[in-house]
Image (cartoon, rainbow, N blue to C red; front, side, top):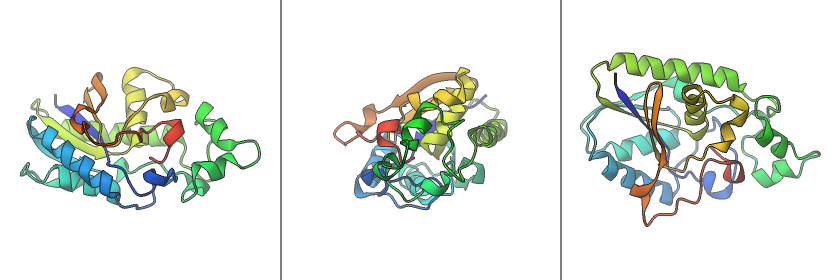
Length: 213
């Protein structure tokens, strides 16, 4: 069975200002591009035989930069896209926190029950992501390492399945931009490895305090 090397995309321009992006197509920041380069150097030590990516620009561009020297094609997978955040997309964390009742705080506590208006339900996100990952693993049955570049919400939903965590607790996981998480389904070997990012800012984890996905 193949090992999945899951990488969150580099910092986007929306991440940099704590703006919710969800399925919005947002570019990498300058720092995000440098993070992707550092990710690429780390990948040289691995035997990556295939690369899959979310079709959204921040993930696709990260994959293009990181995989530039690997000599393998990139395959976009629609079901690896980030979860939709509905009416919150394009708004900052501070703007949502200022709404009556602080819906952001409610969502952090229970993202299943306190969904943003118009957002994609987390059980549906998890179902499509788990299915996509299973298809990728099935396509590479020879024990090779496969790179998957996607999003914090996507990786968290998948890890919840692998680790047996309730979906309501997924924001307790920390996933920094361009971090590496390794899974040999269903075994999780590492989460949020960032040693390859030494010297670069990694203070934008995918966590409630810096949410942007």
